[in-house]
Amino acid sequence: MAAAKKYWLVKSEPGAYSIDDLDRDVITCWDGIRNYQARNFMRDEMKVGNLVLFYHSNAEPPAVVGLARVCEEAYPDHTAWDRKNDHFDQKSTPNNPVWMMVDLEFVEKFPKSVSLPQLREAHGLDELLVTRRGQRLSIQPVAKTHFQKILTLAGSKAKV
DNA sequence: GCCAACGTTGGC
DNA sequence: GCCAACGTTGGC
Image 1 (spheres, rainbow, N blue to C red):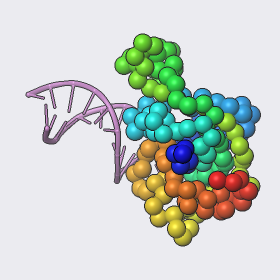
Image 2 (image 1 turned 180 degrees about the vertical axis):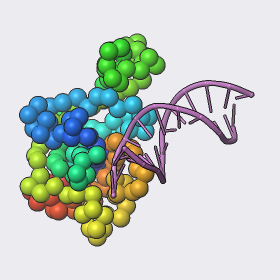
Image 3 (image 1 turned 45 degrees about the vertical axis):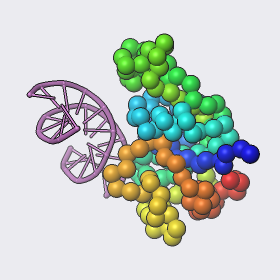
């Protein structure tokens, strides 16, 4: 019996990497994550086929804008050992990688973005992490019921 | 641009 | 192991 599918939300600043960038690239490696909790989610719990809400942070307005899917499980984030990379971290080496990444593939850009105020107003999303003040985690688990509700708000026909 | 909230670092 | 200082995130 396979473990229940998990559901996620990832944040990205659209100026750094937007849903349109993912649409263009189709597949991207989710590099640069330098937070242990977020890394642990990728390393331990994100599985191929898991669906991922794509959230634009530091945007006007901040919003869930699209859907992605995990298409490669966690492997070492080599940008951590590239001195020239913005996310270089000398703790991580090829022999002993500290940071990991997964690959995400584009599924859709939502017909309707769901803004942070909308998420806050919607009934039944009170527990959603991204709506909490001060919540900075850039990879967050999302309950299946919440995920389904957001897809509905977004006008998505995707099946969870 | 401001600043509150958070995670990390490092002195002790 | 505590905690102040610092850097970053991200809403506003």
